[in-house]
Every structure is written in structure tokens, then in C-alpha cells.
Length: 89
Ligand code: SF4
Image (cartoon, rainbow, N blue to C red):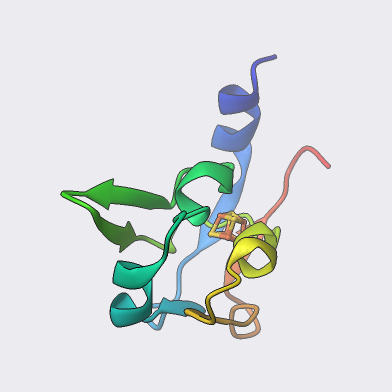
């Protein structure tokens, strides 16, 4: 089974309030924008040099939190009852 097929089996209870927020002013000055390379579900993308973020498909792996060395991210787990429900371990 391909990884995309496995991910498609997961269930998401999406909170309207993002559990991750980014500071665009800091991201603009970031020399590497590592978040756009490491997120397994590509929640961080570049649009004309600007980091664009979507939290809805977040796997809560914390990788972005670790690689952001610029202090841009405010990261927390989703509020209880929201977030991902893994269905294949
Ligand atoms: Fe992507 Fe993981 Fe960060 Fe969620 S926690 S946005 S899946 S890198």
C-alpha cells in the first residue's frame, strides 16, 4: 500500500482555530525556509517567496517545530477532540 493510500485512511477532526501559527514577518527573513522541505504532508508551501501554511492535514509529527530555528512557529497539539485519528498505526 502506498503512503498516500495509508494517509487517506486517517480521520481528521478539524478545529477552526489552528494549532500551529506562523509569523510571516519572521518567515520572510528566513534564509532556508526548511519547513517547506520537511513537512510530510506539504503543509508549508512557497507562493512567490512567501510561506503559505495550512494546518488541516497536519499529522502532529512536530518536525516543523524542530526545524524552525527562526522562532516563527507557535506550535501546540490540537484542542482535545480535534486533530488526526490514525487508522493504520
Ligand atoms: Fe507538517 Fe508535521 Fe508540522 Fe504537521 S507537525 S505541519 S505534519 S511537519
